Length: 477
Image (cartoon, rainbow, N blue to C red):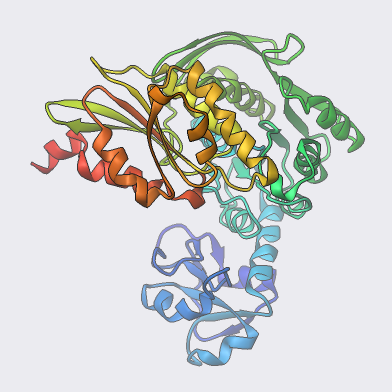
C-alpha cells in the first residue's frame, strides 16, 4: 500500500464516526467517485445534485476501497461486515476531517479566488512551489462546498506548501471555506462581471470575494490586483479585517509586484518585473497578457510563503495550459496542419476577451485564418445580450477572420458582426459542429470557447476526431 494519508482511528475520531466491519489500519487517499477510486482509498458517499453516493458504495468496495463513509440513515443497506465509518451526514463528516487536516498541518498555505484566472494561478503556484518543497494543491477546479474540504482533507501531514482554489456563485459561500483553509496568503486575481444574475453589480461581487479575508491567519498577507477597478474597495475591506500586509500587483506604478515590460509571443510571454524589490526577467510558458499579469501575483505569493523568488520565476517557463483552458493541439489537415486552442471549459466576458487576445497573437500558417468558435456565456443576468454584443470590439481589435456562434445569447454577437466575419450560426453546439469542422483548412488557428453549459467540448472533440494530432497519428502507425 502506498503512503498512509489517514489512519482509520484518526478519521473516526475527527468525524465522530461509528465503526463497522474490519477496518484497515489506514487509507492512502480519499475519493468521492467510485469509477476512479484507487485501491486502499476511502470512499465518501456524498449526495450530489444528481446522484447519491450511497448507491455506489458496493462498487467502490469491490474496486478495492479500504473503507466507505456512509450516513447513519442508510447503514442498514450494507452488509454487517462491510468496512464502514458511519456519520450523521457524509459531507459534514468530510468538512470535519478537513478541519482535522488543517489542524495537523505545518505547511505554508495560499488560497486563490477571483472572477477569472483562479485555476491557472493555482496551477502556476503548484508548479513554482513544488520545485521547492512538498506541495499539495487542489485538483481540477475543486473550489466549492465539497471540493475545498475534499482537497484539504487530502493534504498529507508532511506537506510544506499547500495551494487551494476557492470559488463562489453567491455571497456567503467563501467565508466557511476560507475559515476551513486558514491561509497565510490570500490572492484575489481580479473582479469582473461574472455570475451577475446572482449579484446586484460588480461591487457586490467584490464584497463576496473579500470574504476571503475572514479566514486569513494572523499576520497573513493578501495580494490584490492594483489595475482592477475594485482595488480600493478590496484594500479598504482588507484593512477593516485587520490585515496589515497588503501587496498589490499590476502595471500601476504603485504596485509592489509591478510589470515593467512585457513581450507577448504566440506561445509564451517574456516579462520584466519588480517583485517586492527584486528586479527580475522571466519567461512564462503560456501566452496572453492575463497570464503575465497573474504571474506577478504568483511570484509575490510564493515569496510571501517563503519560497525563493528567482527559482520560482525560472519554474514559470514550464507552465502548460490545462485541458479546456487554453491547451493547444496540432490538427493534421490534408497535407498541412492547423492549430486548435481549446478554451471550452468555461467563459465570461473577461476570459472571453483574454482568449480572443491570445487568438489575435497566434501565428497562422500560409493563407491561414484566425477562427473563433463561440458559445453562450451564462449567468450574466439581464446584461447578457449587451455583454455578448460587446465582444465584437475584441473580435475587431484582434483581427479575427471568422466567427462561428452558437446559442441564443451569442446571436447578439452574430448580429453585430460585419458580414465578412460571419462564419456560421446555430442554436446549439451540436447544431454548429458540422459547420465548424467543415470550415477548417491548413494554416488556420481555431479557438473554441463558451461556458460549460454551452457544451463547446463537443466541437473540440469533433475537430480532434476529424483531424487527428500528427504526433499521435504517427505513434499509432
